[in-house]
Amino acid sequence: MIEKSYPPNLPSWISDGGENFEVVISTEALYVRNLADRPFPNTLDREEREISRRQMTEILGRILPDYRFLETDRMEEQDRKYLAERGSLPEELLPRPQGTGLFLTEIENSWVALNTSDHLRFRFVMPGTDVETVYRKARDLEEKMEQSLPFAYSERFGFLTSRPTECGTGLMIGFIVHIPGIVYSNNFSKLRDSLLKAGLTLKPFADPSISSEGHLFWIRSAHTLGLDEEEILETSRDMIYELVEMEFKARDAIMSKARYQVEDKILRGIGILTHARMIARQEGYALANALRLDAAEGITLDAIDLISATELFLVGKPAHLTAIVGEGNQLQMDTNRAELFRDYLKIEG
Amino acid sequence: MNNICQLCKKNNAEIKCVIVVDGVRTEKRVCQECARKAGIVEQNKMNRKRTRDIITRTDSENELFCPGCKLTYSLFLKTGLLGCSQCYSTFSAALTDILKGIHSASYHKGRGLGEENTFDVAQLKWKLSEAVRQEDFESAARLRDEIKLIEKESN
Ligand SMILES: [Zn+2]
Ligand SMILES: [Zn+2]
Image (tube, rainbow over all chains, first blue to last red; front, top):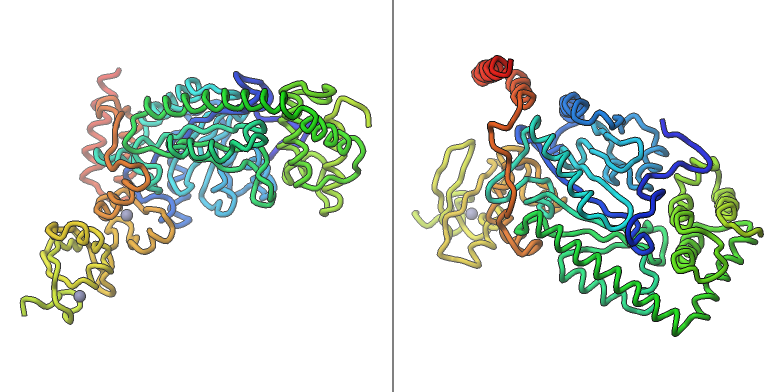
């Protein structure tokens, strides 16, 4: 079902650089909606979820002509993991897929998930800092759906969701950010505190199997109730531009104060990449972090371009590695990772 | 006699509340423990004068549960997931505190549902198929008429 190709085809939010792509890899707008006339999917049994999926699919098929429909419960686990690693399938569809479904665009800039804990979760994603576009597109979709589907809503609590953390507007704005400057200059906890105060959450992009937090993070607006949509957009927009400025300043500062240490870190990374025969998951992640900073700031040898360096975060993940190079045991995976990463470098090893 | 909890029939009743079972409201006097099991004790701690809380109880155990989806309050606390729209009204007292904690707000602000007349025929057909499935033939007939009317007007 999933096309396996080498070089791997990538979701559009990685392959096109956007505004402030050096720091902000992507921006997403996510809506949560439920149907008014039935319980939320987490209390439905398998058969009821399947009925609900069939009904929704019939209507959504007309609203979403550019999306292909995936019956997620018939997909191989490897394929679900592959899509989840690239953000094209919500994590919730990994463990309990019965009666669930996913509409996904060809370039993977948008999906609509059916029967997660909520009837409908849908998102748009764009490269760089583009809050307006992702919001406008997600909102268009929401309005089209509302024409045909009765949404669960109350005057008091707004749009009703299975998680009380998401009721109200049911709208969340999220970003993937790369902030080595803030991490190196020990400003990370300061950033996390100010995000929290502004009503945003931050979590590492890497899965829990990687012990170091690295420099890549998800940021997401956490307040859906008591703020209207314009206020949610404004908060997210203000915060992301502030973060971009803070990161660029931090990069300038470490480059003037600690240029040799940073260069040393990056050049050692390139040394490993060009000569290592095996690269473990954790090490691969650390190398991607260093190389992406190098590519963004042009610090050393121009060993890799920014988009390729961004891809490293993705292709080093297990399901991607398997899809690109094939299955294998731990040893083979680490060998495959080393070989794949070396191919990304412009310099010969 | 008047001061005995009407749920466990053992302890002293200290709280007056309204209990809804299958849509029928009855006023009951209950003890602290039964109130706690029903998930209304926090409310009363904060405001002892506010004695009217709507709860629903099962016959087996005196726990607050949602008539729409049968979700109990303790299961909600465990999973963090509500089971249906009605949960919001069933657990509204407890949710108000939870929401204030999460969002520093407990009221929706901004855009609501679109106006009824902007809903298209597809939504009415959706409602019709639901009414048929639930054998609610009265609503089904009404919806069929509405759909016919709109389709005639648009032709
Ligand atoms: Zn009692
Ligand atoms: Zn419920």
